Image (cartoon, rainbow, N blue to C red; front, side):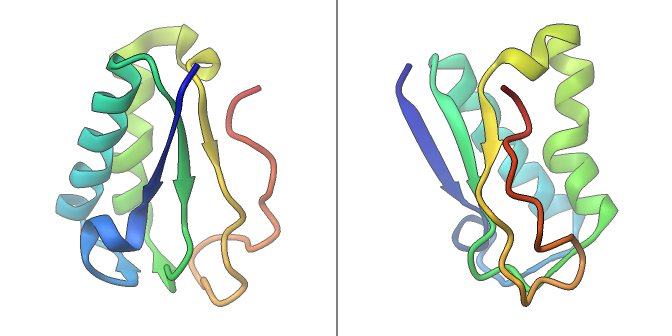
Length: 97
């Protein structure tokens, strides 16, 4: 399976990931990659703050769209930088096996 890394800060054009509109950009990029059979890796490099509104739009709604098999679709995250205040910098495990 090919892998695509989505650079979140670059995609939204900011190091602040707080708006649901920006989360929608990430969501759309994830969906496009998954539908093309790619494993998706989310890079939070450069992100300084996250909100639940952003994350719910970017990732949360994928569960409703893709159903119970979503966790096996190939979405992973890279380590969140220590400077990010909205999410634990210790999360290094993939979101899916």
